[in-house]
Length: 280
Ligand code: GLN
Image 1 (cartoon, rainbow, N blue to C red):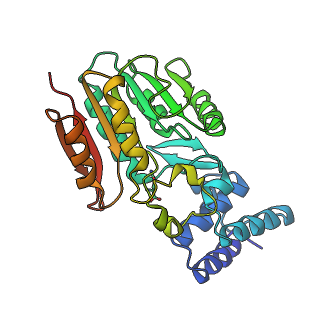
Image 2 (cartoon, rainbow, N blue to C red; image 1 turned 90 degrees about the horizontal axis):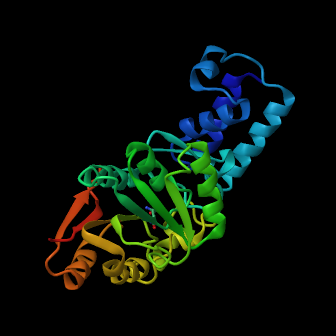
């Protein structure tokens, strides 16, 4: 079978099973098997697959058809233009979270050598993207999952930012030894009842998604810890889910009555990031 034939057959199978972006996914998995980039795939499109390659590709497609996300099959996901290693101990970074990173970069530029805390770092995508974009920043990256921190540490070495990212295992802001200038976080915020609707369910760690009955359990807990762990003039940036902005801004206003609060909308028009800036 040629690459062209394998790809077209895989695409048909994915489409028949209602897998979104079937063409892209089929191509991603084939490139993973062949370990080649896009250009090479298409310049030698009519080359034959070896029997082993054919078999490996068939197995990848089978896993994908059973619902396993392609990021776990390939072990990689691109985020903020960077390649991150992922496995089923960590949430797969989502494109909408790039907004959180962009906002954190813009706001961090106002501080000299800022100390940034990334809470619930998972594979380290946010912490490492920030470290690479802000050469004078130091980052404390916290996660309660040791397995997640192990993945994040591998990503940190891969991107050579070990000297500026420190990993701490523990519950939200508790492990921080000093207050941060910027706290950035993508906590689990999916309502428990909505978990079955997350299309990676059964594969991604529920710990990284489940936010309790209204989705705000973790966000609430973090908000109450913030005062002790943020510097004067500091800034808190949180990713939130659809429909949560009012509850979160009301909560923050009740804890920090004189702070400045903004809500930033993502490319899909969803209120996605809440930013709290402490007053003088
Ligand atoms: N945006 C993710 C989803 O809906 C949830 C991420 C999170 O809970 N922080 O799948």
